[in-house]
Length: 377
Ligand code: GDD
Ligand code: MN
Image 1 (cartoon, rainbow, N blue to C red):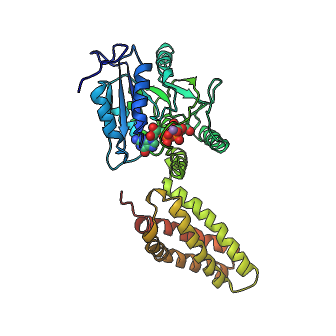
Image 2: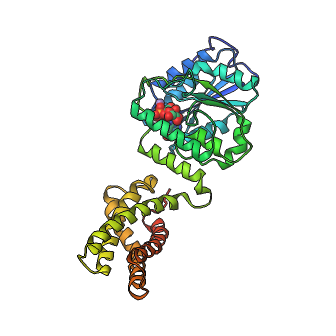
Image 3: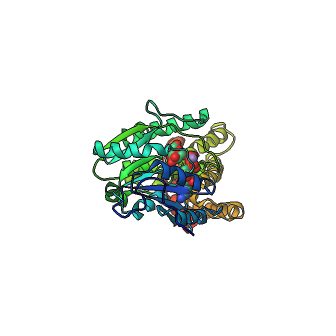
């Protein structure tokens, strides 16, 4: 195959790289040639490389990228097998380049690649570590986003600013440029979880990054579909927890406790109906409330806390059974302790029940983390 020389610039020539452009992709077969052409035309005059990091897309994006690489010497392909995740893909892209600066851009043409030369100029002229494309600045915008997606983005932005102390207008942006040296200095503290690589980088331990922002308008996706789904939202929640209280207490335990707190509400509702309503004895009401709360907790934990090792279909019944079996010890301690406190120690029923729940929940977490949602990854 003949190698096309780029139409403009010194790209492909020998000499030090100015810039690497990292393009994470998953099922972007049709977009890969388009973003390549768009980048080559936007970056004329610069010495650059384009690094696609593709998670072995079933649509064959990797093969398409290799075909492009045979045609354009600036294109490289990292094909990851058996792994998924936007953040971790970007991390590998950063580590693969020798360029002093790397940009991250979506492969679906929703980001404005024509801004890249301006971002590089800003980075060098203002001598900052990071330049972020912002949709929230004057001159930026959200394209054709639905009102609900916009609201979700605003909520996530407000939450992440509050919890991490990040002072950017758009810490959720997926479009930014960073000195690779600053990246490497923080790579050891990245969680690599989920979609929000910029937030991950900003909230990682390390010297404060100097930042500048440029506005951009989010474009409409032309081909393929967005991968932002419930899992992405849960990964975002996990990242926020990991970066706040998660520094001291395991993130999964916090999520498990949140579900547990919800379980307490369920438990108390059942208990106050059955016992508070005078329908049965305390010990029977507490037992029934425990069983119901336990079942609710199993299903909520399965979709929330353990969304990344979720039990499905045929795994559900044995999973639920093992959850019940493993936590029956916790339930015994729960009911036994609560009954003792209520009956023998004359402690008011609400506090007796609460003490039982806390003891039971701690045991539940330890045992079910080991048996029910075993980390097989
Ligand atoms: N390698 C890899 N692995 N790439 C992925 C994965 C993955 O698991 N998931 C998504 N991508 C790629 C897509 O192929 C696309 O090139 C880019 O990452 C963005 O994914 P989209 O699914 O198009 O995301 P979006 O448009 O909904 O979200 C955008 O806006 C968010 C801000 O609200 C992205 O720019 C996000 O980065 C940004 O945070
Ligand atoms: Mn997109």
